[in-house]
Image (cartoon, rainbow over all chains, first blue to last red; front, side):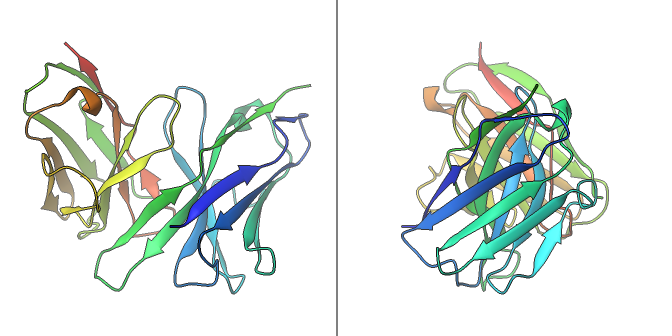
Length: 123
Length: 107
């Protein structure tokens, strides 16, 4: 059973870079699935940041695209998020998730999630 | 971006009640509609994908319906463990977008 675990600093200074890693266990990152990042400001809703395929192909939310890089490390079975020029508005719980793209039509869903990690942007 | 609008934003209900949550997309998303449940301090959990297919392990009291732009999540008889926030999400196009959530509270 695939499990995901986020790791990285819980505090980032304004104008700095937020860097998180998601370790995939119980399965290979080399699969038909995409690997996503989703964030949730405290007490608010969910925002999709972007995703990566094991080949390195990426898809990003246009609202964040200029600041986001998502990459994959197949040798370590993990993928990463870099978000530059952060402000207080980037304070959120960051989740990594598997975007399951199955063979069944219309089946494209975030079916496995990490526990989430709170990142606070503050000096 | 496709906007997902949920209603109501919150509701109060009793154990055993039938609960209906609605989700409207700003354009047709065919059947690329998923529902998630999130409890405080936890990650979201997928309940239903492709409008009406129950994720493995999800109780049959949850059901989904709709197509195109209008969708519904129904809980046939609310249980104590169902008090949570529910989100709809479209996977038709990039960026993936979520509704703002419906908080189901105890009456």
